[in-house]
Length: 426
Image (cartoon, rainbow, N blue to C red; front, side, top):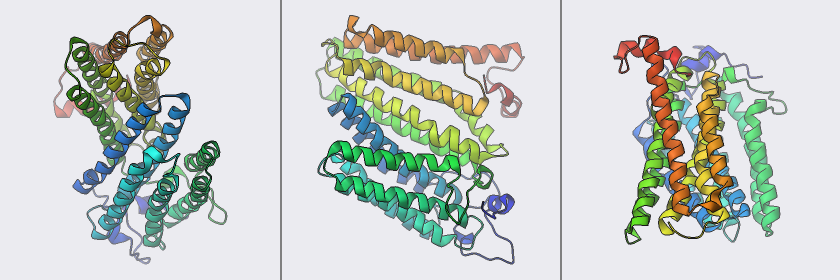
């Protein structure tokens, strides 16, 4: 267990008798941390990564291709998320932090470029870039916080990333795709399980979420922006596919269905849940716990749903009246289902409830998948869009009815928004 005192870490400072060079690098905790322009610039690398993953799944629309793409998505998300946690503590406007982030960006851009051939001839390049991101960034942070209260936490993180790095490099050295996937899967498992046991490390003990004194509002905003990145990739695919085809009635209908689906997903996430969840984590006594569960782990499910749905958007516009395939049925119904399931888990983690409306939507999408071969690709896609659009409209109706029953105006002023916080979990 670290000897860090939560109040010291929360202020981003150390006691007067223990000066640390990390002080100048840490974000001030006097108020809510804002997302900086450099963080937004950093995210551009991952716009490209999301596009690469979507195209890879489109080109390998099989069970094996989906599993490989999922494994790569987990790596990409982990590289971004660990950087998100780092910039939650450290000031991206400090020159040293900016230089470190620029190094992560160039390695991240290289990693994203290698994604299509990660299970082929580019495996070593991909693995090396990923390891440089994870281990290199953490080495920088460990050096900066060596005599700081946060130091032990980062030292534990470094231990687990180095162990996983050996598996990433070992997998890249194996030419058999199955063996490579097995070693990389083990590496991902070690990295994803580490936060749940507090990065338990020989001689260093383990951390608790109470020691992960993050700025909850900043964490929420960063993950909200990644949802926007994924939705932006979906819109980009929709526009690019339309530009590459003659706009027949079928193509136009697919275009409208794809865009309407993206709007519905945005509406489900951002209409009021995102804001209320951000308020909840910002005021939480243990923001590290919610940051770990609701944002670090659960958001990846929604991101995966958007990426899978983008594949369906591109296919439906390319072949709106074509022959139904198992692959298309899986992405057309599975993409929205993953997003809805992830959003349901998110609401459960933050507000402690699982709404029946989301369960109903999941059952409807499962039913569509079961009878998919009775439809054309366009018809199935439209039906899936109708399901998520209906869920978005249901949320709007339920929220307004709840406000009306409690006598709260539908469009409250800023002071009233604080009073309605207890309604957010609904």
